[in-house]
Length: 453
Image (cartoon, rainbow, N blue to C red):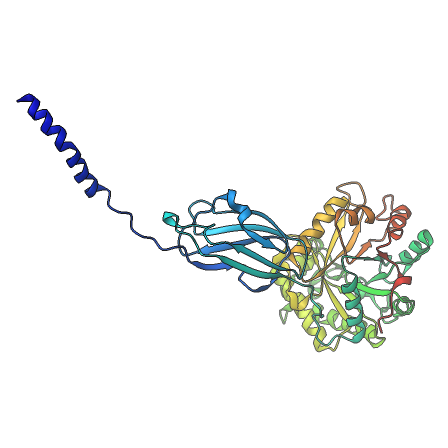
């Protein structure tokens, strides 16, 4: 009897197991293949910044990708760096590097390289885009022919050559350019003037109505640049108990940048008067058909000048100046915005800016190249210039030699050391620095410039 029971139990076990399996582990349901939802950049995009680019490929459900299969992805136009699905996600992230502008790029993900649940293969995906090209026209659509000609010349030489430049000693001369000629036998291509003393012109010191230094430089064949250390009244003149003072540093100033555009404020009265005066002075240059590399409101994001209160007030000032100059008929200007790097929220916009500038003091050649690369990638449709450079107190040294900067990858449109005070013991640029610069075949001096009229 016991043997029979054991035999019956043994016979029943397989049947019981089969029954349990059918109830607990039903067939896995069918899941459709992943379907492409979107890509970033969008397929067909034409203004993608060059350099490191992240391509996001998003599907309608979570996907899987084996990083060991990266060699099955195809990318043209640059270098494929990495590809991965980060955690549980419906997005494949592909990192590429495209070093050049105006480059057509194509990413192809073959069918089945990406899979969905149940290993269902995703169909082939192709993403095409172009990296941004340099802006071919000026922000000012009515720019005079000479300004257009100068801009085109800068475009033609950008990243294959760099123009030499000097800063006027204090404001309204070519003294530093003459010094460079004594050291090297060549004049720099550009001389930058400064309307710093507008509040005391024309009666007390510099008469900006007398454009002789600027015209003589232009007639010699040199390129004219100009900036404005905008000295404003430091306090409301109607309540002043002492003689009024002027300053451009924020720490010495009660002048509020926001109020500059607010009617009825003392700041607006100062702003309106100064704007009318600067327009009259710049018009004198336009009357002589002199194009100007115009760099107002520089280093705003640094916060040390009154126009650097905050990004919104700064952009309002820049756009107001641009618009007001247009309305006044000023069309000889090429607009240069000075970045502090990492200050994208201070950028007025492509429609108001032609060239990006960067001011560097005491930086090594390698750091200059890093700064250049960052700006060239962030503003890929704009040329980038070393708008100021020289000795830095924090490093105890001057900026890297131009030959070292160039070899490190800094392809500035132009470079401009600041001037040295008469009693200076450290120098922004000395004879050796300039001799290194002018000895380079890619550095353009005044005698190599074409005419722009």
